[in-house]
Structure formats: structure tokens, C-alpha cells
Image 1 (cartoon, rainbow, N blue to C red):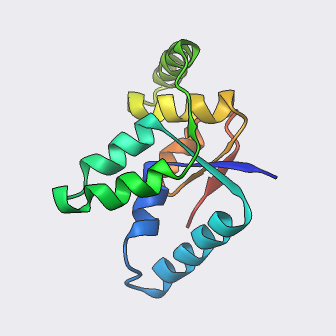
Image 2 (image 1 turned 90 degrees about the vertical axis):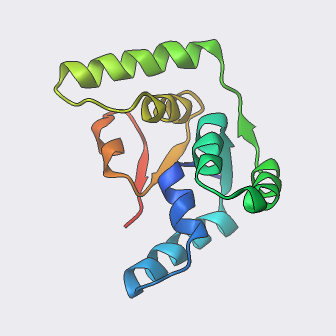
Amino acid sequence: MTKYLFDTSAWICHFRRPMQDSDAQLQSQIQSILTGEQVVSCGMVIAEVLQGISDREEKSYRDFFGALPCLETLPELYFRAAQLSRMLRDSGNTTPLADCLIAAHALYYDCVLAAADRDFTRFPELKLLLLE
């Protein structure tokens, strides 16, 4: 079974209500992965999602993410994130360090990164499922 790490952008798409046909199709794609594959998370993604919610929503989101396996953030992943950041910067692509850390998790734990954020296409080694 393939292991999927959802980026913050994928979770935001999942949690919002479909507003147009393209959103409904994206929601369907996400739901298909959630029901048929192993989905994991990491601390950086959880923090990014939780920073954008209201206080009254926090418990339900914490319960949701608490039910998912959470990948451990090993010291090696910080070194890898910094390396990825430098590599991208040297090629002219400034990328948020949070994205580099998420990509480092996906690479280290051999996950497919599901994301609606095209910035992840900059990571050449990443197994990426671009949600559109």
C-alpha cells in the first residue's frame, strides 16, 4: 500500500466545501486517497493547518489529526530540509523552509506527497501527486 503525506494545501482543499465543479472533482480525488491508501501527517503540516482555524474548531481538527499516524521529525530531516532549500535557492527558486521540511519528510519516509501547491514540482526527487 502506498503511503501518502498530505501537504497543507491538500488538507485545506479537503476541509473546504466544494464551490465549483473543479473543487468537487478535487474533493473526490482526495476522498479516494483517504479511503483507499495509508495517509500520514507530520508536525509541520499539522501546525500550518491549525494556524488557520478558529479556536472553536481546534478540538475537532486535533481529533482528526490525532487519528492519523504522525511521522517523526528526526534531526536528519532538518539537515535535509536545509540542503533542499540551498539547492533550490542556488537554482533560482526561493522556497519556504516549511515546504522544504515537508518535502524532506516525504523523501525520508518514502511517501507520495499529495499537494495542491505547484511549488512542490521544484523538488526533483519527490514522488508528487499534484491535486488539480
